[in-house]
Image 1 (cartoon, rainbow, N blue to C red):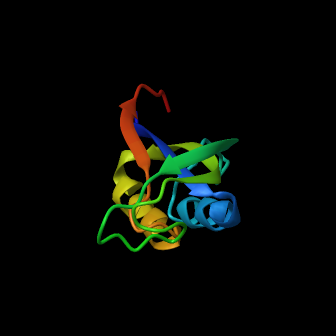
Image 2 (tube, rainbow, N blue to C red):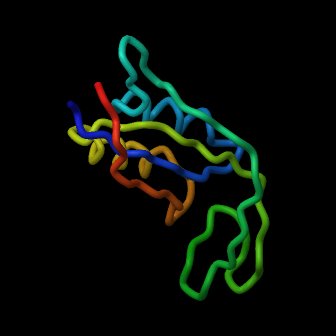
Length: 107
């Protein structure tokens, strides 16, 4: 059995395809004889850049709301570091919001 992780990342609409491609090319979303498998859903990201931040969107000290996409996929543990690196390189935010945790999976 290959150890699996769930990965969730939030990205502005304008960069969702680039992030999906980057993480898929790095190995995320491999299920059986399929690659680049994911689930996406729309939402609204909310944040306030603090002093010293260099926001891609918004201004320091001002609350911001952005139309974003939530990307969910499965990642084999052995490629998780490479997938996170690809995510960070493709994502426009200074600090991308993402979550990862081990999941039960039988492969």
